Image 1 (cartoon, one colour):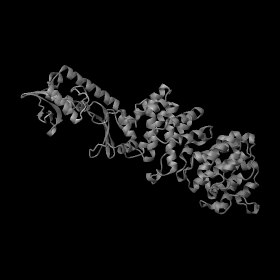
Image 2 (cartoon, helix red, strand yellow; image 1 turned 90 degrees about the horizontal axis):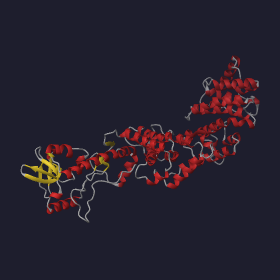
Image 3 (cartoon, helix red, strand yellow; image 1 turned 180 degrees about the vertical axis):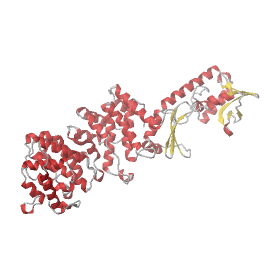
Image 4 (cartoon, one colour; image 1 turned 120 degrees about the vertical axis):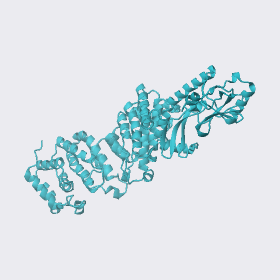
Length: 583
């Protein structure tokens, strides 16, 4: 254990720093004056170098540990620590380990590229690496986790490059910094050297926007098989990937012992950017597109792993991207990862419309499907509370629609009330507003069950011939949000003071309900009328044929079998009666 720094040595170090740099040095003062590196001629040494040269190794160690334990002036300390790094200090293995532990938090706290951030990172590397170099090669294995973290921080902060790249990229790092070649020497495992060579190809640098994936993964990239998995994840080309791609990912996951940690780190990746960076600029950056592909692939990998915690993280990352916006929907750069996450959750939960992808996820434990359904429910609760039937999409409104034939679906209308029916328009909406539309589609089964119950009640009315007053008929059937569209597709018979009138319900002026027959004549339903479903069994053949022709010409499909469909005739269903797609 090195004792505390004596006051006399502390004062001598402070005087040397002040003589070298002054009391208030500029950001690049020590580099401009060339006093960080010790020249070959000792007469040209800085005061810090002379002081360190005059100390015994034990005093040098005390000074180095004191500087890292109590950082107070990083801009001045860099000169002193450079001198300590260039003189043998006799560091023990335990002291070198302590220096590394003191240095690494500084890297985590300096994501900026300002001059002060530059020096804080540099001062973290000089002394610890000098201490590691003093150790025997057999002792260096214990430092491998710290060395891996340092070399990753060096690559990200200084953009260090292997030989062959532009000279100005290599020379941006300070000369006593850890280079790729030096890292390969300290990381003596052949696989570690292979990782350093493959890393720029698998996770290219993000330039001014940083390498978010590398920051999130950290030293996990050195684990065997991680780069192979990342290379496959980056090749995803759709939110519904091919089965061959899913097979490759499953194979990589089965061979990877740290698969949950890698997938979890990618799902927790920080995707926020400064407010002044426009979305149009971000969407064109190759690093941002690679980041989106990695997160989309991680969403499918999470479901392939079958880990309930990872499956929950897929929903959380999708919701997090939506909460970052003040408006509905997600950013264009987030469409691929969010839509892939929702689709993967739907396939894991066994939702319809994803047969091939459900088969690719076969063999998952039951708790994985339960977690996927719970994750989808959290998305539905976020945007469509239970009982609600519509959600705003900025300039559009999406809502749950009950069609006359009893089917249900999601329809989108503009603020002017025009329905969006083009495939291009729906593709755009399904991308940007994937979470809102998915939440609506998740509410479809409940609405479909309500529509089935209403169809059963109507079928019972047709069989029994039960009648109700006109007031009750309008309130329970026509004005009901679920039964209304179904009842308006059926033929009703009203017993009035003037006789029997048969017709289809239509809305008249002032919101009054009318019955319109095949000839266009109407009758206003009054409170005293007795209304029942018209039964073709009790009608003559001419009236039945008239209603058959009327419904066929109008393309109206009824929710129950009331008017017989003639052989060879077809009635076009109103609306989209196909089962909803999950995204």
